[in-house]
Image (cartoon, rainbow, N blue to C red; front, side):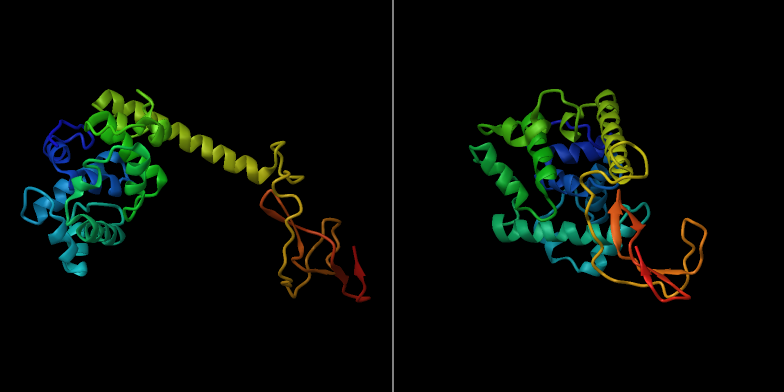
Length: 264
């Protein structure tokens, strides 16, 4: 494996990614909750702090966990959450040592079916289906690893020039397109979440069909008077109720303080 990548937008870091399978896997693992360039600079930073020109799965797997966390935490940190990510990088390397004798490229070497390769990638610690599909698309689009059916196995990320992920980044222009796509996806997800909370008609009122009838099962009580909508303050309310668009609507069980009678 010796290709030119442009994921870190840093010549030295990108050269390491292009020649080191473990560096590429580690960069993909780090690519969450931080900018893509930051994530893919991580492998080169780790290697430099280890005093090496490449990553070694055996060395990282055997490294003292506290010392490895400290190594990733040095300024500038390798990740926004260096402690948890240090543990994940070590888990990945231990898995590679156990299953592939530390040879990261063996994960895809000789695999002839895209679905089988996707399964192998999903078996890696820290690689869910989406991350595995993105890395499979990166292998096919830029690293020359193209088993039969790899595009189909990679899903939408395997589509030519889809600009959905790091698999399509070949320079600053494509990076901008991928970042724009991610921003649009996040905005759409945020809007969908807001719509789900407020109901399908966009008003905080009647529940959408997805929420209607979700009854609270725990009978907590406030133990204090609660002013009702009609202005009366002489009623105690339980929190029994129904979720409408994610908001608990008081209803039903109200006790009049003076008479002790329940009303609906």
